Structures are given as C-alpha cells and as structure tokens.
Length: 124
Image 1 (cartoon, one colour):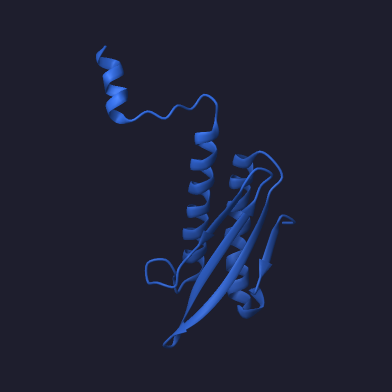
Image 2 (cartoon, rainbow, N blue to C red):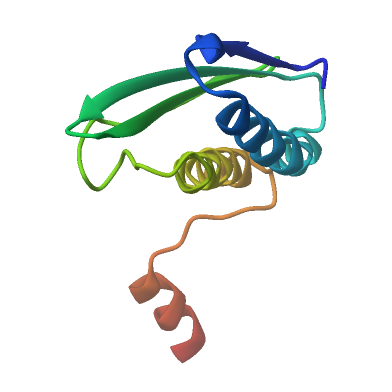
C-alpha cells in the first residue's frame, strides 16, 4: 500500500518481512476507514536478541490531518514478542483501540457519563 512506510525492515528475513507486511496491510484499511481521511502509517521495526531467539519490537505512528497517534511496544516480555505476526497483531490492536477511543470521544453526539450518573438518570 502506498500509505504505509516501513523503516529498518531490511534487518528482517524474507519470511518475517512477508508476515509483517501481510498483517499490517490487512489491518490498516480498517483503521483508515475509521479515520475517514488521508492518513499515513509509519512502521518501525527493532529486533533484539535474547539468547538464541530474536524479540521483535514494533513502533507504529499514524499521521492523520487532525492528530498523530503513536503506539510503541517496550522491550519487556509482555509487550514485545518472539513471533513477528503476534507482535504485529498486538500493536495493530493497540493502535486501532487508541484511534477508536480518541475519535469516539470527539463525536458531537457522544456524551461522557459515569455509571452513577447514568443510573441516577434512570431513577428519576
């Protein structure tokens, strides 16, 4: 896709490149539809060796006309992963949820009520 820019992807093997591109290109149109405008996704890949295995750390930056969303995974056992597809799915989900939450709260018809306030309204 022309709206996705990869950096440091040359460090990956061909299989890992294909898996990462497949996941990102499959999930990005869903986020793009949510934004409803021109947006650009930058994917930064970092690898670190832990013993015999490689741990993948992915950073996504989504540039929209109104706001810039960034999602960064830390080099911890919970955030980074040894499987590139799993790590890419995790971070795409984080990015989608951040965009969804931000754009949902900006809608004019969306009202933020607490649970207590909501139930108090029904009691009246």
